[in-house]
Image (cartoon, rainbow, N blue to C red; front, top):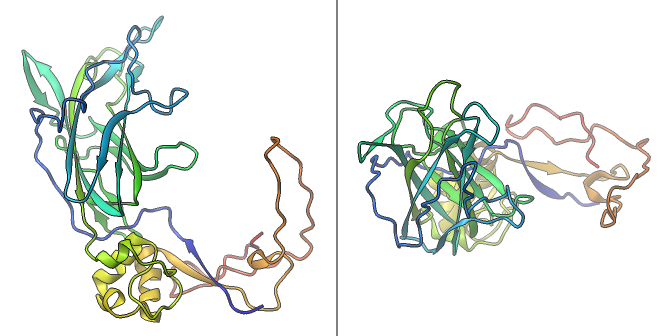
Length: 324
């Protein structure tokens, strides 16, 4: 069998390459249009119309379809509440929001959140008071987590992604298609009312262009050398071309592949003949699970320690695990 290249993700971290993107805490910001507003505080007696994956079929607060250069703002209410029969605010309203983008891009996200005090919306000033999760996709089974967590220093909350090289970026890479946002607050500790709803928020999403336009159109594999610039993983491509513009402007060569290993978390898996019966999918057997759970018998006498191989020390030496 001839050598075959396959790209795997060595880290679960999402890729991107940029400096932080910070916004101002602004609860008074008007929504992009009247439809981008959630006015219902979901509690024991009232149900939101944006329950996301918690209901079937999933329902979202729709933020519309957007292109590079657009800014969309969604305003809403969340917060903790006491469930029916409960004695403390051990439940909380989550707002599930969805938008779509027409091409690979970055998004810069700013979440402002606070309480109404005497008719004035006062931003949360302490850390760990607002929460947001961001996914690419809107179908639970296939959505990919991009960023999640509480704010670290109060309002505003600017979500970041952690890159494989250890740095953080405030521009979050997004493929073409849907993006899902989940906004909420912490649960309320017994005896406090700090997070009792309604809690008000304004979510601002800026759609930003990739730094290298070729990364949105290139079709060649990021672990295969090519005589043309760019590669099909738009985020990794943009990262690599940020280090070496020639990887986009001239050709995607071996040096560009190596940048993808060290900066994107790719590693190159080479399967050389002779191979065991199941290495590199040469002996893969299809399994039909359309009828539900099944029992599948197999023989692992040919199992070996075939990879993945160590490439530029991105991962430790051979993983000593067979690939089936």
